[in-house]
Image 1 (cartoon, rainbow, N blue to C red):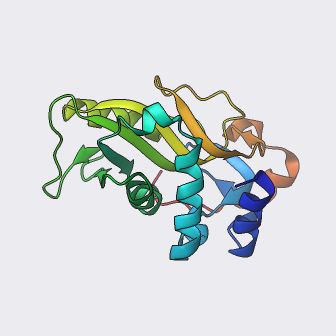
Image 2 (image 1 turned 90 degrees about the vertical axis):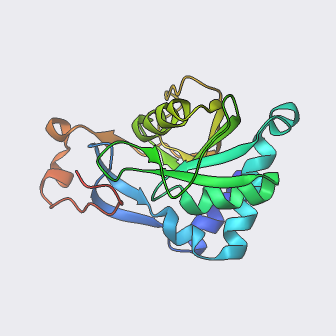
Image 3 (image 1 turned 180 degrees about the horizontal axis):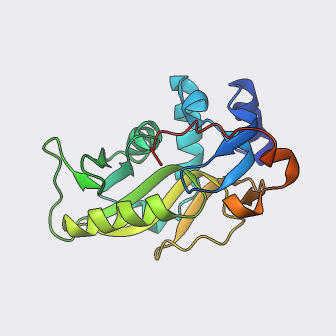
Length: 193
């Protein structure tokens, strides 16, 4: 899938929002990608996951035993990546503020895992998910995401494969440009501040 085709999927689903947004990373942006909207069409989600799976080197794809994603945003793309790779998909969640496997999900010691996100900005959630997977006995062999918003700077400690990179500027709360500072921030994501 070419970048223009990927972006047309986001536009067709009205997943690219403009305004003043408080991202789950704590940073602010004039643009927000609502991946839940792009993934609400099962056929579109399947196409995007197949394209994302195709970005992984073949030898890496052959080693993956499970796909694990952080809840809530990564659940759908994680499930579709499991389907694209022909492996089981699970998720970690934060019932008490720290990611963990629940709902009877478990890993065999040393099982090779692909961690999949919807959007990566700073990589905080991804690194927390990787730590939870490792604590449960898994070995994270790579990370993948529909969208890399880090401008290519994110370091997950494992190889990282995004489907597309969108580099909208983000700002710390004390660095807001006047046009953003003049409007209240909306927090459209799924994680509470």
